[in-house]
Length: 253
Image (cartoon, rainbow, N blue to C red):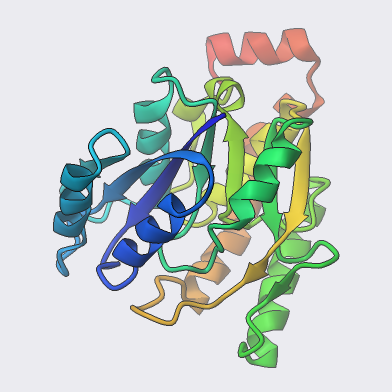
């Protein structure tokens, strides 16, 4: 099984070379697409160097500026789909997601359409150095989103996922509304509404040790409001039968 990994980057020069080396050390058939938002620290240049040294295994999409996580993933997915990858992984560039977990995710994908790396399923956890308030905020945010949307996942906001290419080909990217981290919630909800088989595997979410986090309290508060927008946008889709879903995609949700 050939796996294509999409990695959005902005100022990840300290992390990207180590991450790429770790990925290619795995006993897997992998290629990587780096989607860089014109990082001032030279991340895009480093990605180009890896691409030159690993012809066919590393590719780079250079974007003119910070266009958002959502569009980075959508452009990345669309760039890869149709080029022979059996599955497409998405992961952070900062080592929050252990590359080795891909091995287990691939096994689980054999009986599912998408696999979520979960911090909140039994066996999963978050960084032990996180303060109590941060752990509580993260856990509550997940509970809040999955309860409103009624998605049968323990970790609906995780950014570590492995999709069958055929599953992503069935996703209505033109309808995606989210611009930032809430994109993860919207994609999970759409997969649920479309009745794709979703499974989780426990992960340890390791907080970044290098570089600056893009997450903030303000972003999390904004995401809480957007959960309701996602529900309003797709609530009819989730209650429609297969024929109804096809009609909605043909005419626009």
